[in-house]
Structure formats: structure tokens, C-alpha cells
Image (cartoon, rainbow, N blue to C red; front, side, top):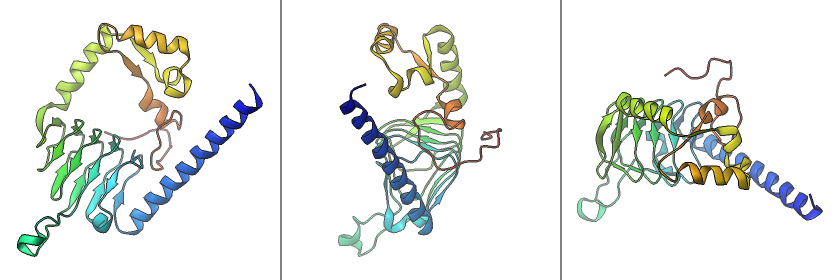
Length: 217
């Protein structure tokens, strides 16, 4: 490796540490203001949180968020007409996962063990053990139906180990294998959750108990 390459790798490593520290400080600030954030939560920096009313928001253990989600606990658009603004609790129960660019409005509960599809707008509470999507978000199927479908596909379609095919481990040859694998349908990267529980891989979560058992679902 060239000296320039070594410097770039060092700068990238330092940048990653700074970003992780900034994210941990953000979690601490939100908790200090009364927001509940459980253990093992993947709450990325791109998540927009209603900071003025974050004490009305609760996120349970082992929840995950895609990029650019929005969590709102108050609405201000009524002020001009009613001279009033609605506030409401947002409760996301454990093991629920919210897709990229989803918006969660005040006064809703989600889960536990509920998956919300990308670009959904959650205007009403969503039941546990379901997969939901849309604007407004509605139940699409049960979680078990969703899992059974993908368990069957896992047996039929190509799959690749997470630690070898994580974005940081990709080589030109591995990228080519993935491109070939999805030429006629989906493929799967497997073992990412297990790697996260072991503190491996690229997912940054709130701290969790690493006693060996991992989360109960």
C-alpha cells in the first residue's frame, strides 16, 4: 500500500470513530431529555427526531431504522386555525423495524415484532407480529407469513456470508458474484444479525448485553 493510501485509510478510520462518538453523544442527549432508547437499537444519525418533544417517544430494545426516517410527537399545522397543536406519544415496541424514509406521526404504537416497509406513513397504531406498508401504513401480512416466504426462498436462491460480503469486504470478484447472483432474481446476504450480536460488521447500535444469550424475541 502506498503512503497516500495509508493516510486515506487512517483518515477514514479516524472519521469513523468521530462519527460513532457523535452518534453516542446524540443518544445520550436524547435520553437526558427523557426519550427512551433501548439496548441494541440501530438509530442512525439520519433519523429525524422531534427533539422538542422527544420525551414523548419510546423505542424498545432491538429496534432498527432505515435511513432518513422521521419520528414526530407533535403537529404544529393547526396553530393558525385552532391556536392549538396536537401532541401524542410514539411507542415503538421491541424488535420492530422501520424502513427507509418512513414517517411516524404522533399518537401511534408499533409492534412488537412489526416490520414497516420503506416510505410508509404511520398515522395509526400497527399491531404486533405484522408486516405493514403504505400511506397510510396498513397490514400487508403476518410476520410469520413473511418469514415463511423468505425461508423458502433462502433454500432456493443464492446466499452469501455477511462477513465476506459486507460492503467493506467487497472485492471486484465478490461484486461480480453478487451481480451474477441477482441477474435472474433476488439473493441473500446471511449472518448479519449474528455478526452484530458478536460486535462484528458495520452496524452501529446502542450498547447491549453481550452475555452470550443475545436478545429474546
